[in-house]
Amino acid sequence: MRRLRYLLPGVISAILLCSISSTLWAGPSWSIEGEYFEGCTCNPGCPCLFGSEPTHNKTCKITGVFRVLKGNYGQHNLDGQTVIGITDLTATPEKNWIVFYINDKAASAIQKNALLDIFKNHVFRFGKVPPERITVRYLPIQVESSEWRKRAEVANRLSLDIELLHGQGDPGKPTQIVNKNFTLWAKEFDLTLDMGKAVNHRFHEDNQEWNYDGRSGFATKFHFTSD
Image 1: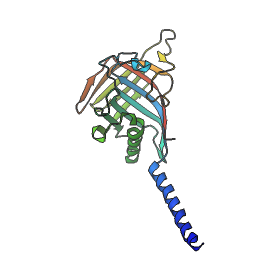
Image 2: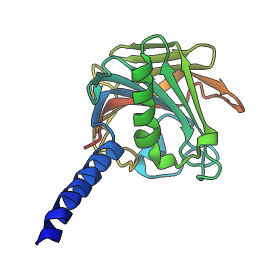
Image 3: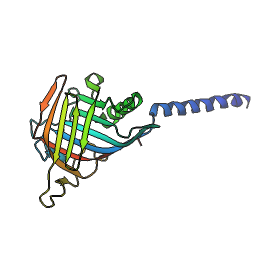
Image 4: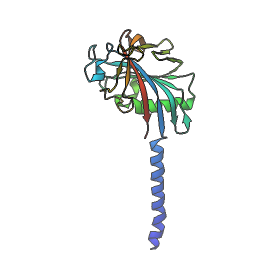
């Protein structure tokens, strides 16, 4: 009985320590939602959205622009932040790479760390890219979004200008995919995609460079959460 009396506080302490460690390891809860638009390698009407192969050399490289309209990372507010992720969706893990641009002018140090955690370790986790092939740049980002036009500029490194396509049945609405067949971010993206065409899509960073003017693009809404 005396031994039990001495053991009991130790057991309780161990349980509490495990609980605290688990909570710390899990990190803060977070949520981001807003607007996404993208330019890619394919011709307009990207076949990847229908489960078919890309139109150019079976390669699908994307520039994905995430405008966070509402977000938080624990107690820290992420409203109004922008993150751009650029990668090759068709590359194998041993060859793949990712470039992240985070707005240097709009984000505080805490917000930058929060956004990097969310996008590197969660949103783009599917790429399984090793740290040495992940490039992170904190640079001024200019984003414009109107009903028919989506634009993003990053210094002299990225220029993306997507013009949505007018539907013929109702010219007041864009051409849409209303029930997409695309496994990437299947639950996090809205089921409806507004289809577009890149008036301008040019990028260069390290050994990556392209001109995809005239290629495919689309816009939709997103919602990612740690829950």
